[in-house]
Image (cartoon, rainbow, N blue to C red; front, side, top):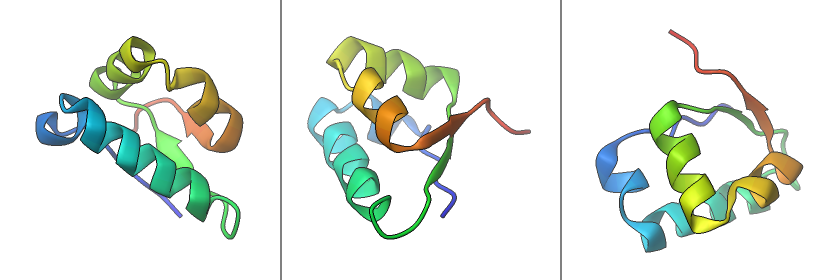
Length: 65
């Protein structure tokens, strides 16, 4: 599965971002999840402490044009 999460309404709301990432982590138990990590999302994940968990559970790659 390919997931992109970079829109402000998803990254700037900590509860929403956490919910999205938890959903992706759950999905990764059934399917590989690839997350091209946009700088906005990377910053938000780092600020909320979710960065390490996401990188441990999902296949995080550089942003794709």
